[in-house]
Image (cartoon, rainbow, N blue to C red; front, top):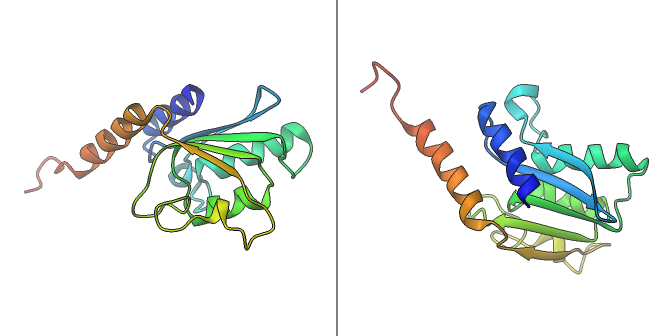
Amino acid sequence: MAEALAEARLAAAEGEVPVGAVVVCDGLVVGRGRNARERLRDPTAHAEIVAMQEASRSLSRWRLSRCTLYVTLEPCFMCAGALVNARLDRLVFSVRDPKAGAVGSLSDVCRDARLNHQLEVSEGLLTSESGELLRSFFRERRKPKAGEP
């Protein structure tokens, strides 16, 4: 999770919402990602998607079985669906997202027995660090700009 947090810090430095992710397979990091929606002007450029794309290229396969995705924020519906479709074995995330989270907060896509694949899910790793990074990012964004009331 420390690697995912490092990616989140890079995203923040680029002006992106600070979310980072890594895919680990057989003990090796095979994919890294951080939010890049603003930089790439791509609504699908979430940290999880970017990390899974890199992992798929690294492993030369779209099925990411035997892999775990570590991410600093609970995945949204799009990302949770992609995790299921990629056949990842496990998801580990730091903090819940009560407004958009789809792995326990608003829904539980990754463990939905109606789907063709379910993931093992763990949460709470490096929660304070990930949460503080997100809070400080949004606190800065909400500050009035010079010359604004």
